[in-house]
Length: 291
Ligand SMILES: [Zn+2]
Image (tube, rainbow, N blue to C red; front, side, top):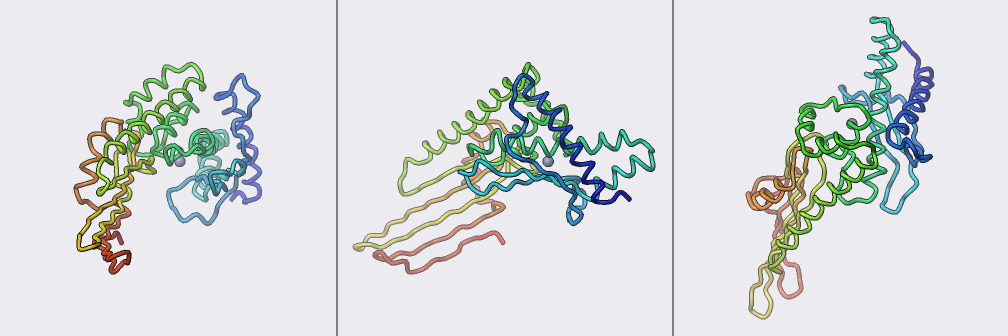
């Protein structure tokens, strides 16, 4: 078996190669490196997810932090597969190519994070089922290994990306794509809030593993208050829809209302009622909550 130390040396070497390869693909005429922040790679022998080949994380903790570190980890499984290529098929070149593809996939997570997630328009641009991630992954010469992601090729976004001559054009498309989504959500929120006794807010974020739409979180609170012998009822609710690469603006516009009102449980769900007399909270009741 290849030792951890030895494997790490190989990974470091491949990481540098891959960074240069990607720089050429994404920024051919620029002196700018592929990533602005430092990136490290290591072998994680303790990873519990059995089918994971590699994963990405970074050390950014808040919005104002511009300097942070990207961290890429490959798992035991990827080392085992590499060894299979080397020993069983007896072809080291294939093994190295296999590792490079995993590293490239993880580097695209880091890249999309720097390019799009940093400005926090829509959460999760770099997640695996985000159209932004899939578009950049495709531009890097790879396709996603996950189920259904080949359907991305049927989307308008993909067709537009295919026509691009360079990454700057891809970037423009993606910026507009995010901007359009964000604008339609803002319009929905303006329309939703004409009644001050019934406040509603819709958020969206990109999905990790769903191509379609999911009800990610829902929080609502009904306040019944008694003041000067009058009873006032106010309701406030906020919902986050997770959207995958197959979801269009139209899908959001056509479905958000139903998702708000259909009473189905969100993944993270909380409905509460408050009773207030005068200015004092008398009782707080949980109506429904996700476990
Ligand atoms: Zn991934």
